[in-house]
Every structure is written in structure tokens, then in C-alpha cells.
Amino acid sequence: MKKVLAFLLVVVLCLGLLAGCGAQEDEPAGTIKIAVAGPLTGDFAEYGTGFKNAVELMAEQWNANGGVLGMNIEVVPFDDKNSGEEAASIAERIAGDADILAVVGHFASGVSMAASPTYQEAGIIEISPSASHPDYSKAGDYIFRNNTVIHIEAKEALDLATKVAGAKKIAVMSVKTDWGTSTAAIVKDLLEGYEGVELVAHEEIIDGTVDFSPTVTAFRKAEPDAIVVVGMYNVLAPFATQYKAVDPEVDLIGFSNAYSQELINLGKGFVEGVYLPAIFFHGSEDEDIKTFVDSYVEKYKVVPSSLTAQAYDSMGIILTAIETAESTDKEVIKDTIYTLDYPGVTGDTHFDEQGDAQKTFTWIQVQDGTFVQIPK
Image (tube, rainbow, N blue to C red; front, side, top):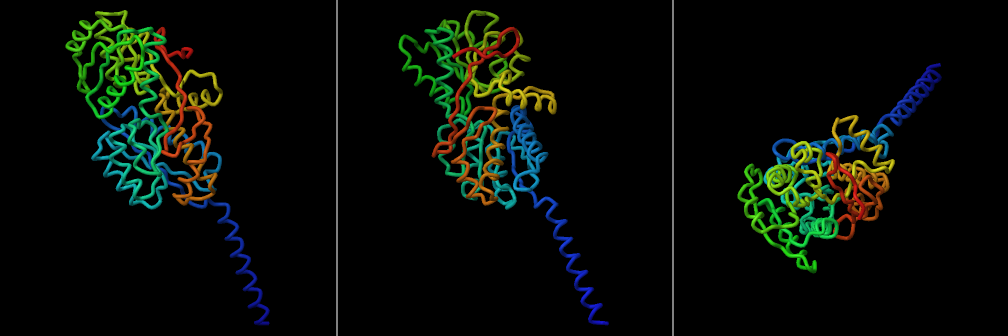
């Protein structure tokens, strides 16, 4: 009798263990952690906040569909304050967390380049949605940019100035930062290849300048047809306000980092007619883009910028690579990213052997107080 009872007890225990195993299979297998790093405070907080919002929105959408490889996605945000020193410290913290597989960020090229050697050494994938300095992706094979090298965007800006605005005399104003100085030099070098077009002036300003009157005076003497502004919306808007007050006919051309609703909010009627090259246009009729914009606006009450959309796609690329590789091994994920052709809201994205994305630009102009796409 005792043997029978013992046998029955063993059977009950086994059934209990099997039931327990079945319950575990229905639970999430674990958590996948992806970091997002950018300026969440300070003068450039709009950009870092856009990165964070976009990455969290993409993670939320994947989690609603079961996560990736049956695991929930957790976004870990870091505020680098747009400081290279802070970014380098953050990179060390991310490298020290074995659970973080990849990072979307950082924002400025110089800040990204302060962090990227640590990510490369630790074997952590970094995709910057905005770094455009030619040397950024040279840090190694774990370093990607979901943006174009600045030479390509600079040529788009000059094509807008010469082919659309019809300018023959061009001035350049640039912020005195690593990005601004190097980009202005690239613009001037490229300009030499435009027959019949001349550079008539170049002025550098300190980022955060409020009074542009010395620059306005210098440019007025040079009499440019168009001014290429190498600066973000917080530079382009006040400059346009002051310059157009004395010369409303001049054409102003910015860069994609000035493509923000804040440009129009700050510049009002003075930014009317401003031209911008951008990889993403929020007013597109493409259904995928409309769905993204609607979801973003509904959640965050603001229209996503081009760089925000690039952050959204950067997160999508990482998660798609994990799913495609069926692995959480960082090296395997990295190798898979190079093979992807990702159909995102910023267009089909494929990385070359350097880790640089190949992108197609859209031309945008401010018309009647809103951004509109113009034909190329």
C-alpha cells in the first residue's frame, strides 16, 4: 500500500512540475534593454526629447505585438546634456550594463564621437540618428549613422540655393561649433564646383547669439542673393527675423536640424520662404508616414521632426535585426544590421560597409506659415 501511495505522490509531483513549466512558457522570456542618449535638458532638449519619445513609441508598438523574441522591450534613457564629457561618462555606464544591447544616440556629431570609441570597444551597437561628421562612423563596425554624411546634405542645400532659388551670389553664416565650422568649410569647398556662382561672404557667430546686427551689416555690404545658414532653428529663426526686416527679398537656406515647428513659431512671417533639405517630411501622403505622425502627435502633442523620425527608424532597425537574427548576441545583431534593407518612415535604409545610411532627400519650404514639400 505504501508503495502505491509513493508512486501516486511521484506522479502528482511530476504533473505539478509539468504544469509549472507550461505556465512559464506563457510568461515573457525576459527583457531586452535598449538605451537612448541625447540632450534631455538644456538648449537642445527638443532634439533629445524627440529621440526619447520616438524610441519609446517604437518600443511600445513592438511590445503591443508581443515584444521581440518573446521578450519585453525596455527603453533606458540617458541625458548627455549635449556635452562630450557627459556622453563619454554615459557610454562607460552603458558599457558596464551587460543587459543593454544597443544605444540610439547621441545627437551632435562631436558628442557622438566622444562616446563611440567606448561603445566600439565594448561591442555595443550605436546608431546615431543625427551625427553627420565624416569621421563619426570610422570609430568601428559597431558604429552606425541613420543620417547622411554632411557632404551630401550640404550639396542639397546648395542645389536649393542655386537651382531653386536661382542664386548667383551666396553668403554663408555658421555657428562656431565643431559641426558648424566643419560644415561651413564643406559648403565653401562644394560651392567651387558650381559654375557662375560665387561666395561673397562668410560670417561665424557664437551659438546662442541674440544680436545679429554685425552679421547683417557685413552681409548687406556683400549683397548676396541667398544665405546658407549652418545652424539649427534657434539660430535661423532670429537671424531671419533681423535680416529680413532690412532685406525681405533674400533667400535663406537651412539644414535639416532646423526643420522643426519651432522655426515657424519663433520666426513667424520672417521665415516665410525658407528652404530646407530633409530626409523626412511629416506632411507626406505615404500611409506609413501618416500613421507614424498621427501616433506621435496623439501621444506627444507635437509634430515629429526629421531627426525624430530618424530616431524612430533607428530603434526599428535594432529591433528588426534582433528578430531577424533570432539572437541577443551583440555581434550577431551588429552583423545582421549590415544585411538589412529596412523600410522605414525615413525611406528604405541600408548601411554601407562604413555604417553610413544611404538616404534620399526631400526639399521643403515654409509657405503660408507651414512646411510644404517642393519638387526636385
